[in-house]
Image (tube, rainbow, N blue to C red; front, top):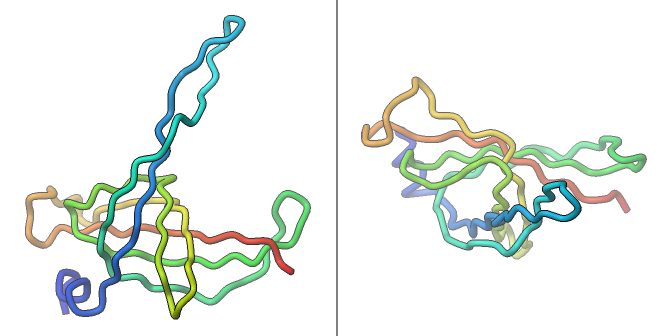
Length: 124
């Protein structure tokens, strides 16, 4: 089964938010500040892994990793936030990495992207 077929039959609609950064000068140093977010929708095939516990910033966190398969033309970059509804639960994932297998051009019909996602939330 091709990636396009998986997305067509089993794909989900994800809301993508991308922070918009602006350089701000104060006292001779440049500081990056978030001025807003851009929002759009992409569709992809999402595989969610089992949650595990990890230590981060001195606390235990439940970390869930996921893999997203989307078409090559999808505009997705690392640090984008993806929100999806799974079994009436709203989950937000951060994009860690984006890769195109075999370095195909985005105009190739077999081109797709594989994104590593991560969801962090405090254990409690």
